[in-house]
Length: 141
Image (tube, rainbow, N blue to C red; front, side, top):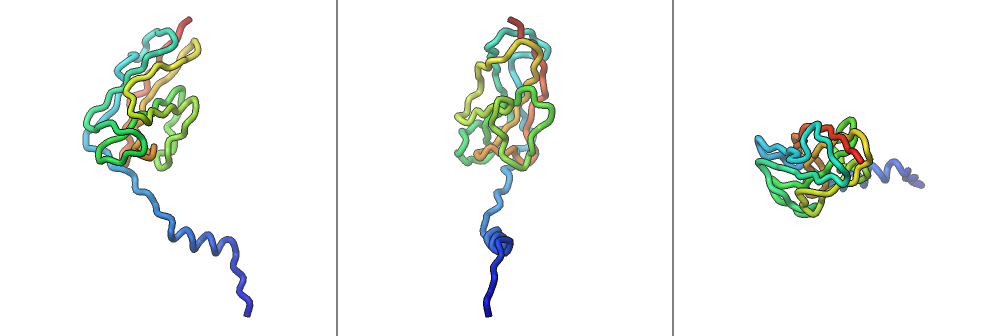
């Protein structure tokens, strides 16, 4: 008797062996915030953005340590990315995987929104995402 194995059957079998990564828990009462610039501030580019974090520590990407994470700056993002997947890396989702707590950001003239999102060692938001309030700044020439 000849057995035919379909691609679907193979994928179903192999999916049993792919580990599902659990999200890192957030420390109770932890929060992230933008120290500067302030909401509504008028600034020149490049903009020095300083990040604040309470209740957790900073660790670089790839370093798994309890109650730690690293910053991701969301620039002009209307809604948060999928909180069950790694945070995208592009012009609107800037990673600070070396553990940076401030950065000079080039922004074009006009209004911009900024928000922080803490990611774990693998860039995935924590179980109970740690996000800052979204601020709006105006960049002038």
